[in-house]
Length: 318
Image 1: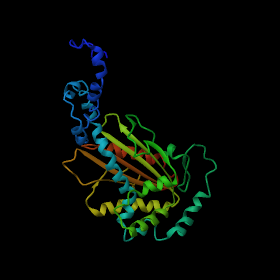
Image 2: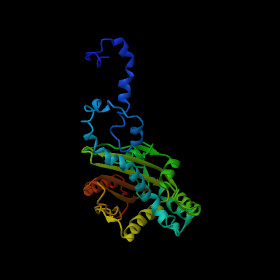
Image 3: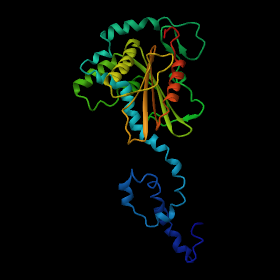
Image 4: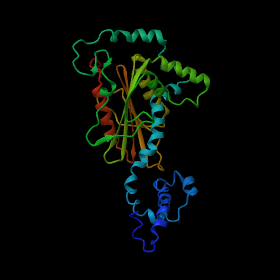
């Protein structure tokens, strides 16, 4: 009502008052204005002739919204990268998918990893940590790297949120990813391989740099089959290198078996991304980072190292 009082020829205010839906119709395209490219069909359905006059004020806030554009596209790309870090390893071996199971099958591997779990360290006083032998105790949320200085909470991972611990089923489903492109036989082989890892849960946390130019996700997947976890990481490293199409990422000081790779360079893309993976005892540790070019690879690698330090197996030689 206060917006219409300045109108000089609005003497019959009582008549115009019911017509306040007009401002509402003008406000309807407002959500479409920030992303006309994504909703072009909808903007064509409701052309508002007075919209240009109504939007000059909201337009100035839009330029600051440009940096989040990389994070908006980061979601599908990060989802793909997660599949790369987890499932692609096994999918790539589909013809010999058993590599992830490690020639032994369930029985052998299950027996092999049982010993560390039967000998917990009785002197553990921290709420979380790693026992000698590689098994970790405490909530995965505590094992995840806290949000460091210069960062804030990042984007949600699908419907899971930006700081979450998943149970066995959810963690297994996330690790499995989208298998729609595989044949029934390949899906069956892959499911068998994943089941042999005996996934116990997963923790995920995302981090957004305060400068809005980089998004990071760290994921911990806990599994009883430590040998299988190591095989996943080893194969991720060796297979990615053998393909010869991925760019090498930074080395992680103190963790020679950790690996970081970037996808083939694409000059037309304003974003870049990197995947890092390592294994610490019963934890498979993964980092996904995406940001505007040039990607701050060394900073991301430093975050990955801090995460590995937090969950490091005290009995492991490096």
